[in-house]
Structure formats: structure tokens, C-alpha cells
Image (cartoon, rainbow, N blue to C red; front, side, top):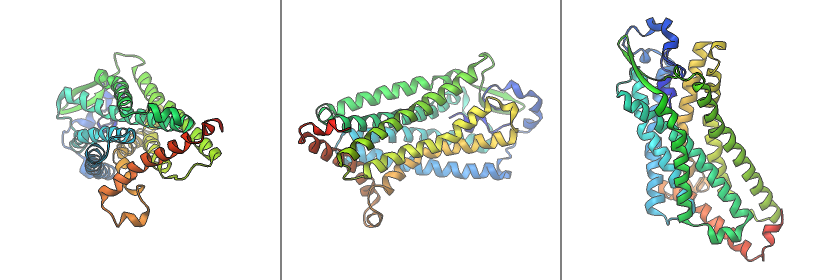
Length: 346
């Protein structure tokens, strides 16, 4: 994600490094001033917490869904989400170090690669959430077909396609990210000076493909699911939908401030620099926080509150993911025995 690297310095906005040459005196000294700034220290502490919780939590999800549970379509979805978040957390220390030192010390390759990984996480997460929503909708609307064709192999293929699309959407970071050293300080930034409309195209395309369109698809899918199940009076357990709804809500709540800040940055002349800079930093940290919320939601929504204190964390997370598989199976089995009536009551 470019924000933690882009917005640490007054001259490091998305569009170009050269745009802020009048502020060169701000970076005339290499000494980091982060420890003297309340906002910067708060962001550092928050970032370290996100890294520790996200790295450990997603490692647990990967271990449970990959080695402790039977491989199903549902565990395939959740393991893919966990892998996406785990990779993000693994590269997050680069951003944390850059923020603390106010200096990029990792070279040009890591400037491009680390930023690409951040956006790979964003797009792979939202694409997988869209896939899961469509999968739920198809299972409810066409239960017999889903029971016969919904396989782990096909789910794995869909996951691979989603990751390939996410990789494609991360390419702009490889193209535009650059490193420049000036007055003793090295920065990793987005250089759009050679592309007149590059900044706007990238920002708007990320907003549409990584936020607006997925949001519309997910809302449509869940609306269909709710109407279908209420019509058939077959909503025996709402827990799977609560888990999935919480995952989707967490993603959009975490990423909305980031996208809003980036869009406002397109017309940066209209806004106060300090306010815009603070908004970008806070929005970036909120977006990063999404990487550890998923495993937390597995834990706190896996069982009833009292049962959380009677079982281990592994059991809670496993129950959260397994519950969806059991509920979906019960629904598909019951639907199959109704002689097709369930698929006609819309």
C-alpha cells in the first residue's frame, strides 16, 4: 500500500516528487522527527499492533484451515483470505521501518515490490469476498446444482483466477513507484510526471474495481440470499451470514477512509495540506487493520459468548469456519428433498 510510504513527508504525495521542490528545506536534515510527533508515534504503535495480531492470527487460520480441517469449498475461501492477509503482514515491517526512520533504506526493487504486495492484498481480499458472496447466492438459488458442481477443485481454480486479477491490478505500483535521494533523505514515492493523467486513472480505477463494483455485487448477492431464505422459512442458523457480513463490513469500513482520502488528494490544492496528510495516514492504518480483523472475527463469532471462555482459541476459529459448511450442507440436503420447490419460491 503506497500511503505509509508516500505520505510521511510533505513532498511525497502520489503525483510526483518534483511537485514540492519549494519545500526542500523540510527535508534538509536527515534526522527523524517521528518520535516527537504524537500522530506519528500513535501510527507506529498501531502499525506494530496490526503487524503482530495480523501475522500471528492469519498464521493460525492458515494452519487450522489447511492442516486441521477437512478441505472443503468454505475452508478454501477462508484459507485464501488468510494467505492474502498473512502476506500483507509479512511485508508490513518495511512500511513501519520507513515511517519510523522517515527514510527508505530498502532500495528500488523493494520499493516497487513491497507496494505491489500491499495492493495485491487489497484486491485479492475484495475479489475473494465477491467470490464468496456469489458462491453463497448460487448455493441458495440453485441448491441441487450447487450440491453436484460445487467442488474444491473448482473453488481452487476460482481462487487462482482471483489472485491473477489481483496481480494485474497491482501492476501500477511496479510501473510508477520510484526511489529518489535528495538532501540526504531517500524516499519511495509514486512518480506520475511522465503520465499526464496517470494519477487520476490509477486512483479512480482502484476505487471502482476495488470498492464500488464489489460493494454493489455483494449487496445484490446478499439481498437475494435474504429474500430467498425468508421466503422458504429456512434460515435455521444466521451465524454463517453474520460471519460473512462481518467480514464484508470490516473490509469496507477499513478501506473507505483510504479511498476517500486518495480521491480528495486528486485535488490537493483545495484542501489544507496538514489535514489531508493526516487523513491519508489514518486511512492507511485503518486499511492495514483489515488484515488482522478477519481472524479476530473468526474467534468472536465462532461460538456463543460463554463458550468462548470454555474452549481454546483454535477451537473457536475452527468452529467459526466449519459452521458455514455444516449449515450449507443442511440447507442443500433439505432443498434437494423438497422436489425442487425451494428454487421456485422467490
